[in-house]
View (cartoon, one colour):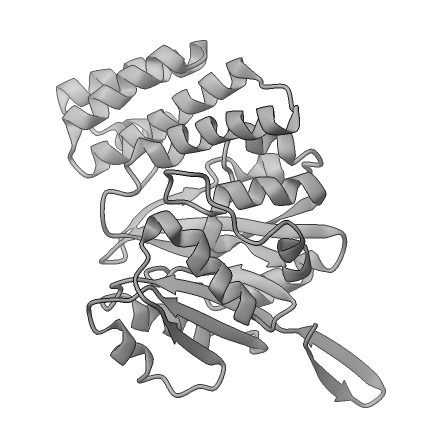
Length: 325
């Protein structure tokens, strides 16, 4: 454990070292802003471990332009996203911090992220997380997740809800390093490109989570990753079923189905925002089949909007409902 000790008069304050773990591959358009967002932190006892998975662009040159001893750059031979856990765990082995914060090379931190979150793991929580803003490459606001943060304010049972829905935005997560190491580091299910959800489930087996009601991450959407329903439904629910069976945990099939319907509904709304009405219509129909009665009514509204060309978010705003804009 490494801490920085500040002494003022008779008072002594210890500030834990936070390791910001950044994996990157061909992020030359984004990596400079990513690093600047860490350099701008109001909490300054951090290190940033950047593991470059063999970028073919000038990511390395850009990183090396930053002259700060807290930034550690490591380049490896390209292994790809299906071996992403290896890349993350390489960074974990180099980490000197008490806590691990996650930040991929194309995303950003708000200036007070570490300051606002650092005390959240002072107790018995093993992981803390907060709200995440989603923006496009031009900084246009596309939404905020989790969709309904109030439900996490006083939550005590973290595992069961997590088995149904991955409610933790990965880039807002801060984890106790010693606990992360105890569960085996970052894990990756076969034939997937994600390490966060599976790792969070392992952590939920051994400790509590803490929700911080603040914006702790900025997700820069620059491809079709956000509208990929695999991110919201297939990977989460399929792996949670496998995980539950392995640990003898009962599966709530109804809740799993209804959550998949909710996920697809939000995916469809964002497809509407980007003008992809045919894709949105398909996902509204899929959402209808899986959702609760209330969810089916919302999906019907989405289908109607998709075919008529109306503005779904404008209608939602007029009805006093949350919008995704």
